[in-house]
Amino acid sequence: MFEYHLERLVPGDFLWEPAPHCWNVRPAAGGSWVPDWADTEPDPVPVPTIAWLTWHIGWWWSTAIDHAEGRPPRDRTEVAWPGEDAAVEWLRGLREDWLAVLDRLNDADLDATAPFPWPNDPDHTIAHLLAWVNAELMKNAAEIGTLRLQRAAAR
Image 1 (cartoon, rainbow, N blue to C red):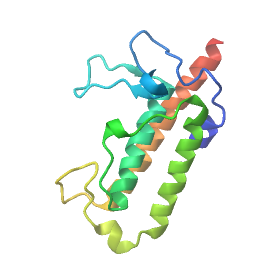
Image 2: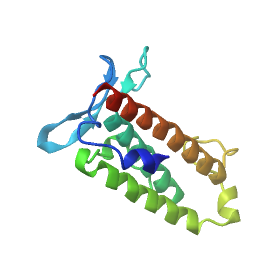
Image 3: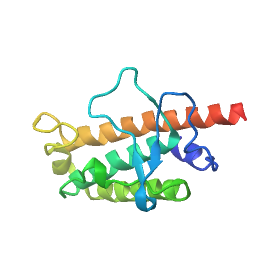
Image 4: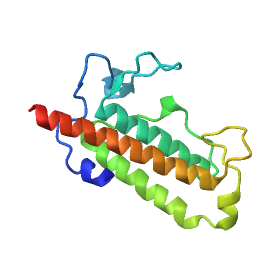
């Protein structure tokens, strides 16, 4: 489902704001992009754009890969959105990195404690992390698909 929507994204889909109250990624000095963010979830919750969702996937997937590989995880602010032209390939690259992680795991690895996204909780394992990544990806793919379809219908 994720690939179905990724391959159908067109220029303008990423930064399209479907409502006045949105989270997006914004141009920053030097040509980089900065995602909207709040340490405490706002009420009401802003509608995320496709750009923000692709950055969000890139952030949590990069962090999950870091944890699974035993590396110190990147901070949220270190994960930069690459822009409309490169976002799809960036996510496809993360998918390949994730598949490589999965290929290396054995039964003992799956039973090990997962430090992410549940810090200091010994009851969650790497197997739980894999399930969480799957659920998060399904949710974000559905959000991207819904936004893509809404924009296409509005044109």
